[in-house]
Length: 146
Image (cartoon, rainbow, N blue to C red):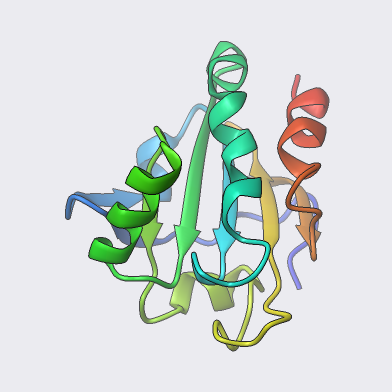
């Protein structure tokens, strides 16, 4: 399992517009990875919008928020439109990124784990949380960022 100080596993995924994102693209910034096992999993919908609500505060701290789901680009696009997300929802349909970060092994399970990871500008994990509280994590992570 990942722990504080580990080098964050690199990844390459697409967003809902088909643009490729790599973790290394955000080098030099704090990065919050917010895993949605699936957008329609209970508890993985409106609660995550609190990242949207705090987006300006995260940006002021030089922090990028990346939501990662096991859905397709089209499903992520519909989810983003429905809830008014304005940060990238990245598509991990083969689940390799999710598995690397310990997010979930069965995206359809009702108890699929939400995972929050905070990666520092040096590319190392500052925080790694399994089974995070979907409502509280965005504000908690923000309060701990330097």
